Image (cartoon, rainbow, N blue to C red; front, side, top):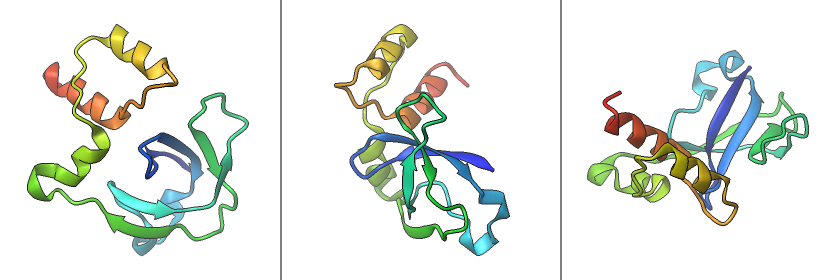
Amino acid sequence: MVCTAGFREDGSWIRIFPVPFRKLDYQNQFEKWQWIEIDLVKNTSDFRPESYRPTDLDREIRMLDKIDTKGDWAKRKLHIGDTIWDNMTELIAAAKDPNRRIPYRGVCHRIARKNGL
């Protein structure tokens, strides 16, 4: 079982656990940057507000469109945002602010690039 992180169509962060990814047949394994459809419920055993779990682990995960990299990642940039954080204290404060939507994956990627990782 693995944890799958991503975002919803509205851009909000989501964490799905458990996902039986490695037990799925290869043709049923979704890719990074691919929309999926799965029935979820709030994961009450996890305190994080973005945590959900599948309603039924035996139910098929429906694979939808992939978000491609055409146009210098134009479609992906719509989801990860343009903000480049160089101050972790400010980033953490913004992430805790319920009135802000922080595109986590993009933030992590850009901090790593800025720091040469």
